[in-house]
Length: 249
Figure 1 (cartoon, rainbow, N blue to C red):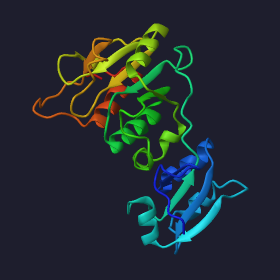
Figure 2 (cartoon, rainbow, N blue to C red):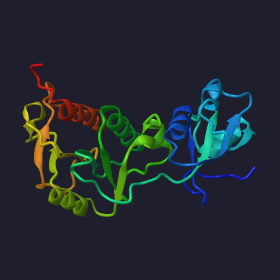
Figure 3 (cartoon, one colour):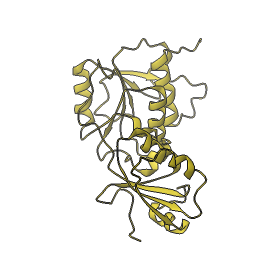
Figure 4 (cartoon, helix red, strand yellow):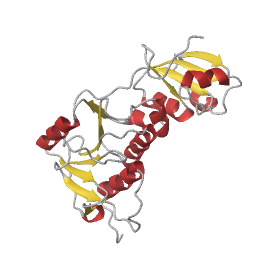
């Protein structure tokens, strides 16, 4: 059988896992070209079949060892799919239609990226901005970490986060910069309707080129000797900003 590598097939990319494939089918934004399934069929195959279109994609049965090599992981749950490229948004956002955005600055761990996108979808964020080539790729591992929910998000990919942020400010968005220290208690801030949460790199935080372009906010901590995982902090801040939660509530 022809061997594909994730992200390197000219027809699309390979994704794996039950939830990502189900969400791709539910979102109906990109085509599934070929499904690769172990024999015997994985237990969740019946769930997937219920979402298949009338004109089903090509189906290939393979051994678990072949699927391990195909996906370069053992976490495929017995199924993978060759799918069309992710449908990135072609233009930026506007405050009247997408008032609440998340800008992800140089996050390098694909699982962190996926977890952030999962939180963004669940909480109801209107759009995501990521950098092209300067952050973790939205690949099969990131999609699986998002439980496939990234498929439902509007994601704008830019070559310059600085330029993108300046354009957003010019359009009427207010940026809020997530920092570990030196920021305002996030639960005490009155947020603008049109707002952007900026989350920085796991170790270095927000890059220098973006600093100074927004209000610094922080999550109060009892233990200052440790810090929250970037994706956990993102989920907390998005919730506070979306629902206006305060420490006394």
